[in-house]
Amino acid sequence: MGSYGEKSYLFDGRLTVLLPDSFRTMEGGREQLMYPYEDRPQIILEDADTCRFCTFSLLKEQKLAGIQVKNVIQSITKAVVSLYPSCLLSKPRLVKRGEETCGWFSFRTSGKEGELRNFMYVFPVNNCMMLGTMGCFMEDRAGKEQLMKIMESLEIPEKKSAYSRVSSGHSVR
Image (cartoon, rainbow, N blue to C red; front, side, top):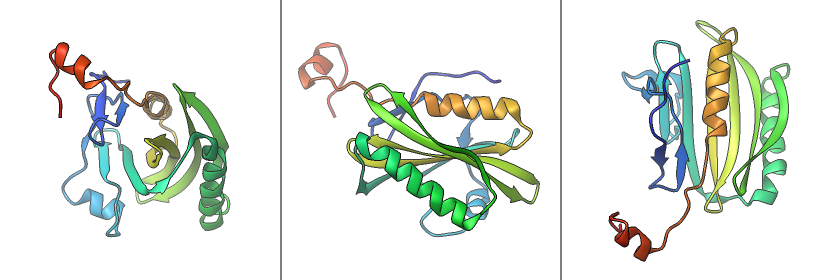
C-alpha cells in the first residue's frame, strides 16, 4: 500500500498528517482541470500512478468548534446529495482525533476514466474549519484504505512553550 515518511506539517504547523511518500503536489495543469474554478483547495496532492488524490483547505473565516462538527458535516452531506441525488456511499460519521472530532462522509462521482469514491471531511484547526477531500477509483480497495489512513492520521500538534522549544534546540518562529 506504499510507504509513509514522517508526518507532514500543514498550515504553518497547525495540523499534522501522515502522507504516503508517493503523494506529490498536483501539477501540469491537472489541478486546474480537476478544480476548474478560481478558489481551488489550498493544498492539492496526488499519487499520479494510482490516480489517488487529497486536498486540504484551512478556511480561516469559517469558525468551527468540536461541538459543531456533527451539524456541519451533515449540512455539507445534504448539499452534496442535493447536487448528486444518488451519490451517497456512507452517511456522515464522526471520529475522535485526539482532543478534536473529525466529521466525514463518502460519495460517488463519475469522471472521464471511471467512477470515483470521494471522501469529504471537516476538522477543527485552531477553531477554524479545515475542509478536506480525497478520492480514488471505486474498485481501488487499497486506495480506500490508504485514504482512510490519511484522514485518521490528522492531529493538532502539541503546543510547546517558547522556553521548551529553545531549550530542546528548536528555533522559535
